[in-house]
Length: 155
Image (cartoon, rainbow, N blue to C red):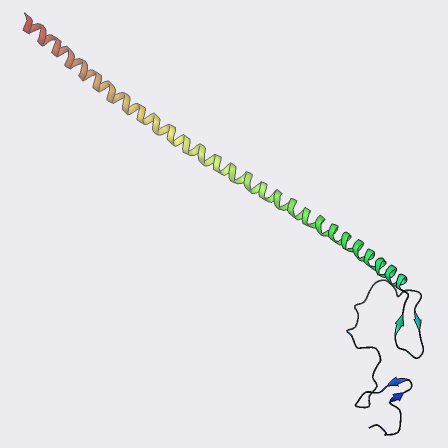
């Protein structure tokens, strides 16, 4: 609880409405850790809780952090791309092997199928030859009989 006549300060810091210490710097989330170190010229003014950094140094520091992260990201991307490329090459090799196997199987099946078709054509040719021979024999006999009949009629 606060006393009525005292100032609202405790060792240079303001007190909040509930009597607890309140920082003069607004509360923000904790910054994520950065790899780079804090810039070399940072000045603390004893009565202020603020950090004062010259603008050029701050810009240079952020640029160096940015360059570090960019180079790290570039290296990480190159490593990931190398892994991806190796994986793609491996999958292409597997796909090529599967394709070669399936083409070989298909060729074997086609050879078997063509062999059966050739066999059936040979059987068909044999049947057709027999039937054509029978047709021509009967046709020749009919023609000979017809010629002999006409010759007999003319005499």
